[in-house]
Amino acid sequence: MRKGRVIFGELKHRILELPNVPTTRPTSDALKEAMFNCLIHRFNIDFKQWTVIDAFAGSGALGIETLSLGSSFALFFEQNPVAYRTICKNISSLNLNNRSLVLRADVTKYNLNKILPMLGQRILVILDPPYKEVSILNNQIDRFFNLFHCKDIVIIAETNSNTTIGNVAPSYVLFTSGNKKAIILSNLKC
Image (cartoon, rainbow, N blue to C red; front, top):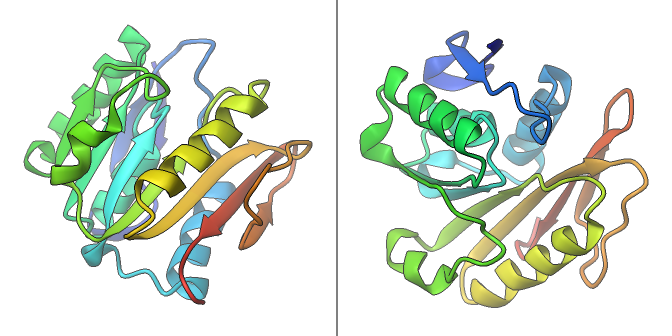
């Protein structure tokens, strides 16, 4: 198996397993660092006050970063069985079972109303769907904003440099080398 690492917080430098499946691509350390620095410094996010949904979670690395930074709870969605087992193994090896829940489910078809009681008033949603499926990304952005319209919400979407977002204007766009970018959308007043 491939390896990654946690780059922020109390679990900094801890090793993560990365699933060896073609549908999963790990986020580079450079993009992770840019995303989390932007969330902390531009959006003033104190992770202790935020719950997290890591949709299309892969290895769970991004959701685990939020837990390492102090998030009280992270919910992971992953439908691939190998990736799902990898997330569960990472969560267990880092002793994060009491602060997380991993669902082997397709977030695009999941009844999100079921998870509302698990979430707080401030929600960070991490979206990293297949890059070729721009409609999935746009549909999920709309879906999460509509569902959580009465809460503080930040959505961070990892995608390729060619992707455009439909109905919501991005609050911030981060580029790294290569073909990857992260788009941050929010209803917060920055």
